[in-house]
Length: 480
Image (cartoon, rainbow, N blue to C red; front, top):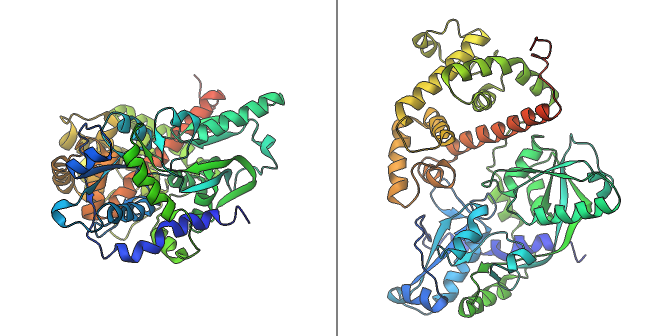
């Protein structure tokens, strides 16, 4: 019973306030991070409290109407009411949200570019050396193993010996896996290994990949797993395999901030215990999720192997990352040359006949010319719109995919808007991505996100093959 109410805490901590929150004016979102230190008295004098918050499908996101949503937004709206109670508008202190990748939360706080970290942050000994925490929002949080339904079944903690766990390296799950490996080493068993997820991957992103069998195992807080199990039916929650059972989740602040800590302690004390009210509200947050598909099933891997050399050939010819192009091909058609869209697009890369003709690559009804056309066209778009931009090669490709989906003129306009709002116009994730979602909705954001997730998976597949000194079935018989 002591465990059963933990999920209800986070359901009921904030979500009973959701309806009321919709009547409030939206809180301000910014990206520019000015360097300011000081306790709550300094914040009051400036009338600004800066909240570092990771973009997350559970804790913070912007809906299609441009409204900020999520569990941490609901909590911070209550904080806004607490610190401004009885004040007239000219006296109020404003909350400013600064979207920040999870691996940058504590560094930005310590650098004076934020005042509060509002995230699903577990208190750890390592973090306590760097920052102070509020009264916990929830205690006795369990970190449990999550697996794909297609992954080999686990019987106990020892079953993790030799297994690979896909986790964000900036989470508390890393220290939990280190503790696990000490146990395994003590029993002279092979250690579990960590496959590092990109720093912008939140637990929900990783669960999405496990659900699609893009990753086999991960570690997640139990309450998050229970929430997302409603949406991701193909995950298995191993409640009997717990890596940590004493976790506490809290808000974080810089050390030596007693005035701010008093405010946050009061907030958390008032909201750390609730009822089961809000189950329907949780569903409201999750119901519009679009999932990536299973790109690691044997059938999908066979399709990937069959096109590997074609993508590699044209990747080299046009000097683009062939794995990224294969990932786009999977997003477009599941690498199926027989696919035809209602608009008349053809094959793996979903090329329109008119475009194929202009590109002069041959008959796009055939696999090789079709992939040639897709890669050639993306290279053309990248050169035309992003060749001279001060971006990394990866960001040039991500912006090209976004332009391919939404139109280059629209993306160019939104990059300018992102810059005007303090975001970096040359970085897609957590920057221009946020403005794109705000102005044109989730479709383009999800399109680019899915391609990137497939890209990560294909990288892992190729690394695993390299580690085993294997080749794809398509090339294994070719002489070296």
